[in-house]
Amino acid sequence: QAVALLQQSVRLGTEAREEFWANPVNRTARQKPLVAASIGPYGAYLADGSEYTGDYTIGEKELEAFHAQRLKVLSDTDTDVLACETIPSRMEATVLLKLLRATPGPPAWMTFSCRDIKRISDGTAITDVARQCDAEDRIAAIGVNCTAPEFIASLIKELRGVTGKPIIVYPNSGERFDAASKTWKFGSAVTDIPNASKEWVRLGANCIGGCCRVGPAEITRIRRALVS
Figure: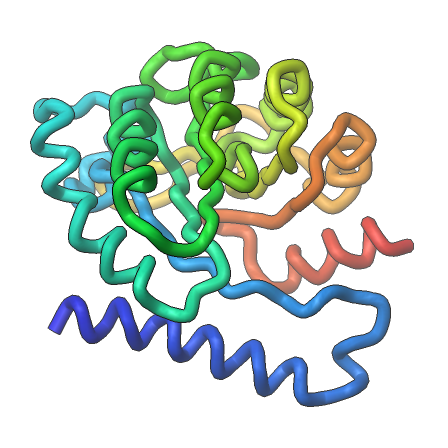
């Protein structure tokens, strides 16, 4: 049943994209949208907030077993790209890169959850994991997601210093996830993401969006800010 649901998720996304693209009005001054199939972190499965810490109690072998079947199932669908996202640790990134080398399929991006302006969630310098990704032909883009928006500008600079590949950023709203209550709390800063997105493009970001608590209205504002 889980395999069927994964396949259906891509099918629904593709059908929605084709319905959107069938209307000529939606084709004005834009590329055809891509469908991305999510390969999320082991921490999200644990539901204990470890996707924001990278504090796993298992090793590479167990992580490989966790990710392998899902990655294979989604690689065999009609998705345009695999979104390896919210990756909090170098170990998990290394496992995913190994699996991507062994599993034919569409290109992938790798985006990391980050704890500050230079490091991913487990404390590894983002430049170190970006160099790993940059060396992989299967990785089409590198970036940051589900991270406080006030960190994004610096992280783009760090990434652009070590890769010429496209950079993707889609931060969360700036709120902090409370793993105990499974709720979002007020964060340490407030960032106007649509306004900040213009600076992110100037610094070298190629694709901008939003993650947790950034809804359709905010995405619309981001798009308007970038095309104005």
